[in-house]
Image 1 (tube, rainbow, N blue to C red):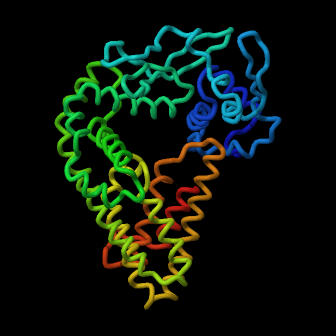
Image 2 (image 1 turned 60 degrees about the vertical axis):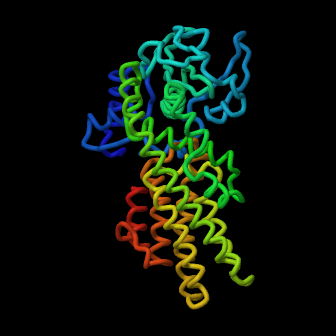
Image 3 (image 1 turned 30 degrees about the vertical axis):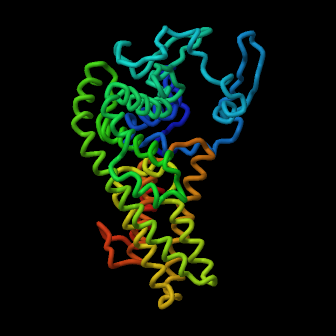
Length: 385
């Protein structure tokens, strides 16, 4: 990168002279370099963690009377330490866009950004809906990611309010709910399971892959599609819940037969089950992968069945999968610690590991595409590159 941004002083001067003073630094810098050179860059290509402290922005958080509440070079850490005191003070210094107690889209169009001036400084907030359980609110958020996450949940809540009759029918009783709730009761309580499934159904039926609306017109069009999709999504979700519960129950019965000496296999089983079936799994598992969870559970059951006659082979494969899983887990943990987002490709890699388990321990179940340790290593190299 340094080799193409030369001479460095002139390159930096050009960036400062031709770049607006507002907006996030890293994506703006990446765009400028891409325009001036042949390099294709994104915000994620910059390793901010490698910067020495003296090159980092120093933040000072003050209250309304100018008294310093805290100082540091890590904004996210400051926000955690100071809580609400470190949030941008939008309410008293921005146009009156924030509203609460909303039960219909009667607040006009919602811009993606809102720029205003406070104490001579230009600030940018990101308007979005916020779920308040029995209503929604329009709020300004500090980041795009935070705004998008809340807006999706807010849209779902507003849609549930708009389609309250249909949702009431589902709340009274999901098809065959007692059957799979009984099988999963040791992990998820019936009430938690129902709430989780209803939230997942709402997200898939009301939004799915559609663009999040920012106007009443777009919201009403989405509502028409949502109403039509709700029965099919409900049916699909309940079938998946039944399939997951059945495979989970069969797996538990197989676990009971495991000898006390197979400690590694027991640990692997407990870890994998905990990553597939847990409180919130229907909401947190991407829709495209939820359908495969029964197969992953069955694959684990077949591994247990085969273990007595394939002990050495099982141990070898378990070691390979363990290294790949740890590599992924370390990367995700590091990103969380640095307050950085998880890319979609990195999130999907977690499910490639599940397919690898199938290919190694339960080949008869087949995978939807070729998978091996070498293929996963190649994908990892591409992620790292």
